Image 1: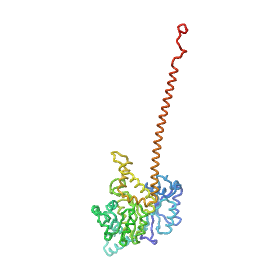
Image 2 (image 1 turned 45 degrees about the horizontal axis):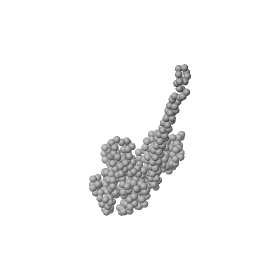
Image 3 (image 1 turned 60 degrees about the horizontal axis):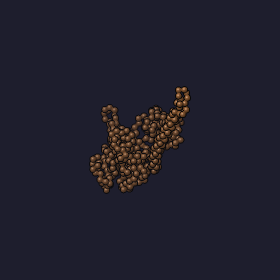
Image 4 (image 1 turned 135 degrees about the vertical axis):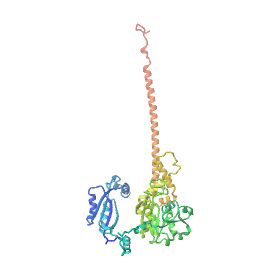
Length: 461
């Protein structure tokens, strides 16, 4: 934000290319044709997570015909390369922007890592802090090299925020534990004073909303998605000015639309989906660790970037997997999977999954799924259904799949019964044929009149 076109800059980017002849040459031509100098290029193996993301993106974004092509097929190779490139220009330059547009036409993944001043030039608050340090030491005896011991960004990351939670259910309670390094307060329609006291959180009754919002930096709305609009209507909008409002719904497009429509421009908006549940870690086991768990977010409208970065850094320091993604892309990738997951978990109640002394990994995974979704409210699940246009089609598909399984079971049962009956009929037929052969053999072995006994002279007796 402190760069401009007059400051010499270097820009770093990463991209991947299809496995075709001349692909790298064509991608570098995007910059050479515009006289953009390059200082470094190197290749590194692509991670399995990114490879799976590209495979999933191709299946969602492109048609079945395009998904079966060499570039976007689901038969993507198990090993691909990422290319890291440094160019000696700023991302703000028109030529660089045109080159990036050209590169994205050839690449299925292209990301700008950032632009920064060339030759270690200091800009913005860092430069001002160094100048102030030099001015403070001007005229003093030299005691060695002057060094800036603390950067302004360090203060932003360690900044303690005043955070308020509107709604203190299971997830709000869990979220307050993750935000324990900040000053946290909560408000709820029910009396949550006991639960709040256990987590060192200050509780406000619902009628004291004005005092609750007083002095807050961040307001997190943790109510079910179907109550979001009603909750915003009940808030004093003037008290939200110059604050950061965060939503944590499982879908983001609908909350984004509601927040941008109902909140004034002086309110910062951050749409998030913390893809973790209370008491579960990345391996699906009990625990409070966020290590490896996805935290998806979009900076919808941010004026105070340091405050938003300080809030997000709380989860980043907890080693959550931070994923910045547009709300539309998030819902396209996640909405169906989340709905089917919660639907399956609600169908698998504990009566269908009894506790066993020995179980397979698959059975244990189903038990974990039932436990996870059982802790969530039905209002949360209904919000996934109501604000997902494809939810009814998914329900019909699940119903059709269940009917198809039932038909296959009935057909298999009928086939086995018919086979057994046919085998029994053939056995009876075989036994009847054996009896007939035995009778014929008995008849042929019995004595006949032509074999009557004769006397010693050969005359009949």
